[in-house]
Length: 172
Image (cartoon, rainbow, N blue to C red; front, top):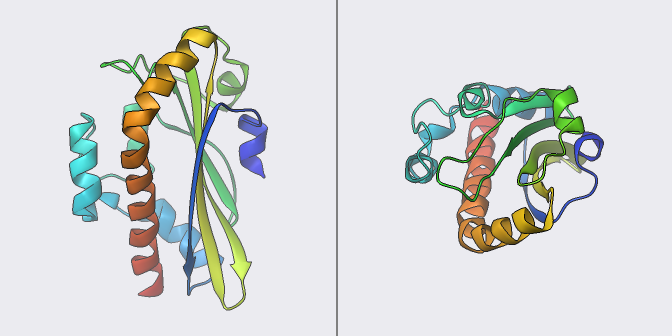
């Protein structure tokens, strides 16, 4: 999978999936175009984190330093971010695909998040996986404490994104 090219080894992970009665091309297009702020849950959780809670698209997430690292059309897209997520300001770094792969500064963590699609009978299975690699022991401990608190909310956002994509893709 493409996600492995960016973060094959990681300290923390979370995965969610959903079956969608639509073809991969439609789901892929919806995933790229959908405004996730249609979901009150996502709007509220983004607002709590201090992120823009309106017009939440994969494209608009770049304003928050998320970057599209790579994609395989109608199969997988990978988004990445580098920072000190456990701090108030986040210490986010501007990255692109190559600098993400090379980044190894102690005190930071790298995170990747993907959407992948697989045919599943008459449905398509849409999966999202989040992986985090901390770049030293102290950041691993700090992130671990942060993850205990944030993981349920992170999971809720991902599950709500999947449900929002499903509703939109099945309505086409």
